[in-house]
Length: 224
Image 1 (tube, rainbow, N blue to C red):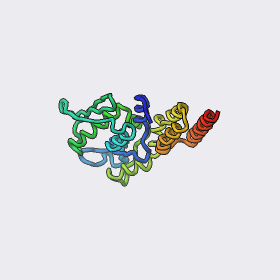
Image 2: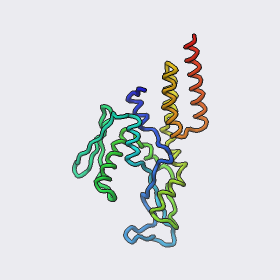
Image 3: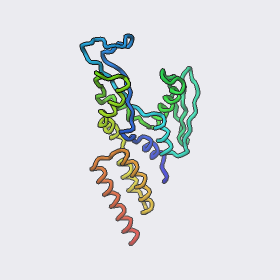
Image 4: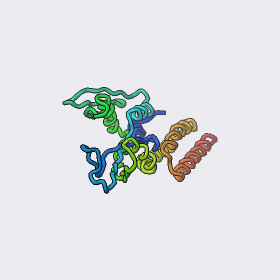
């Protein structure tokens, strides 16, 4: 199936499965980083959780949408690692310093993900700042929090992806089909996306009716 440059950007920007998103602690309230204890022991310590995808998720998305038609390379610019990510004939770049926990490897991964964001990959996750992602840490360690966030923020993870779902994209592709073979190919692609994006029941029913109506119209045209 052939995709236009606009199609590719749409599919690169599509949400990831809610359950595949990861979480980490961003900030803590009522916490003394030097003494590693609550500032006020009469008040709870809360953690603001940040959502993210890892570099393997980005690689998988690029492979899924672009096949072999992408590549990345790196250079150092004023002490920062910069990734040049090429998709088709377009190159977009971004950089990052070495991370505290992974050193140069972490810097490469960070630069790669930031460059991919410029193609839309995972960009919607920045909207998490508009959702309540603070958790009470009482009885829990830093190690516990990512798992707890993943369990408690399932709905937030799903809602984050609602604005970038490919629902309308695939309806348009169905409308453009000129043959039953082309329609089946479009449906095969769309099938993967609607399962991953967890379209609402109403959207899925509308999609299936749209597909059935188009199939009936093409058969009628074929038999005319």
